Image (cartoon, rainbow, N blue to C red):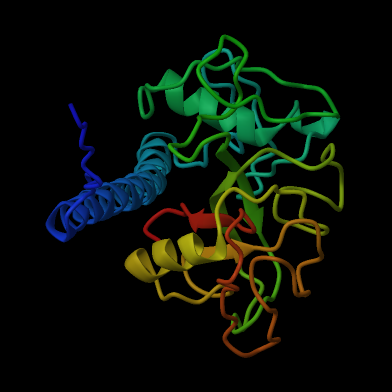
Length: 264
């Protein structure tokens, strides 16, 4: 008996291939869209955190007629500051440690913030922020991974700002690049903040709650590792002109500050 073999081979039809490609496209779009939604949620959280801390500072001022951390009298287990209307980050023996960490502890003591656990007295001259929910933390964590908030102040002419008025701020940073000392702080002198977000993210935050300019207003970019009047990874310093964020980097390149002064 003669055997016959079929030469016909099974294969995907064009319709089946189209369906597979559509499914792959939907999966890619879902993953990309999900990442975008997560990023948007994180940035909204950052804006909410900054505004909340400004409210907390105002609540403290309403109660004590002074700024947390800078207030001369001890609040709870904190150490009093020097009362010069600046929340100074750098650890100085005359300040009883960092006014920033004492500010967080004072705010927690009066119930203005309640989501962080803090060691209230940090008196080391090599003070680095301890970020997060630990028994020894000195700064609250942010929704942005590996970053948190510290206090500091600006007191210099920068960009389109015409006067050297003091601006007390909270700073979103991924820690400090070195130990703070006189002449260096998260925002003064040679900025030692670490980049926490990209320039695009900084621009997004600034545009939504301020003026979108890196060197003006309540929200300002910080060029980590450079002096106050220099171009860095976050924005191009333009002297007395408006400075724009650098938005090409896909990796963190900016720290940012948000003004918390009373009625600001």
